[in-house]
Length: 390
Ligand SMILES: Cc1ncc(COP(=O)(O)O)c(C=O)c1O
Figure (cartoon, rainbow, N blue to C red):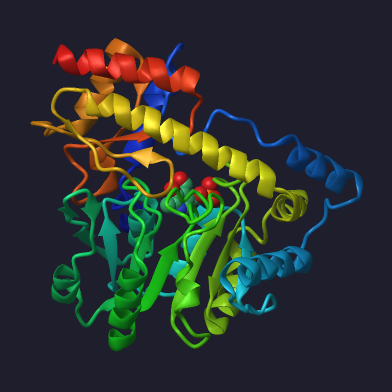
């Protein structure tokens, strides 16, 4: 009998999705399981897409995406980070952050290779490594006081002859941890010394609450890297511009990888949707004021949820610097999936179970606080009641 490839059988289903699929079949659920808000895409972006359709942006584009969008992204890195990028060879527009990660990792891994992944982490990176028939070595972030750190000793111990890359997310989903400049430098030095790719997922870089001025991004790893470094950055329009359903992102990488990823794009997706790329250009050009308003709103949401969680019995929650998640640890919790399922059934609150995020995640819950306060407030009340009754 024809069977599925072993390599795909080895890729586990996302446990976030598994829970969400149950929740999506229910009415009246307060939905905080996905990484998105309940706000629609801003009007000016929708109008830009409508105009692009009317203007005829309905045809194929280059595999690397519209040159005008690549130039706009290069300009963005120049303005925010003082980094010069070659839009022809170092920037590839992708159909989402997930696809940027997918095509990027595909260019780095052969079957049997190994990837170091800092966890707890949004699970897609590890699953994409598994799809490439490679092996994930998870390195949990230790929590020291109120801050997560990078366990460099564990990284040293885990690196071997088949290791090809190190993947981290900063600001982190689910921890909200932001790599310090010193940690960035050590990660880069670690990879340089071993000839590894360093992959930085920076999709939440604008959602940074410790910025000197709200709206300033977390400093990109690209500020530390040279053009010759084996560094790749994954990014997306999804989070900063409420464009999760649009599926447009980008990959920045050393020229050889950028060119190869561009060629592979042909066989994966060919390119991101043309009119959506055009709308992305408008988002970069006109989105600042609205983005800052969103970050202010997210910061207030973060305070609301932190204050509520800190009143709840048996809950420990560090204060995150970025992204839009809280990752509280619940005393005595050993099966976060069962907990979230019961919470969903009993209280109609949908959270993501910590176990979905790999090593170091079990025993915690992920709360996305991007939703409106009219959703967050009752969700926190119901969670508190559920915990008290536990
Ligand atoms: C860390 C991280 N990277 C990338 C993505 C992917 O974003 P998208 O595929 O919507 O562009 C997500 C989405 O949740 C994420 O959390």
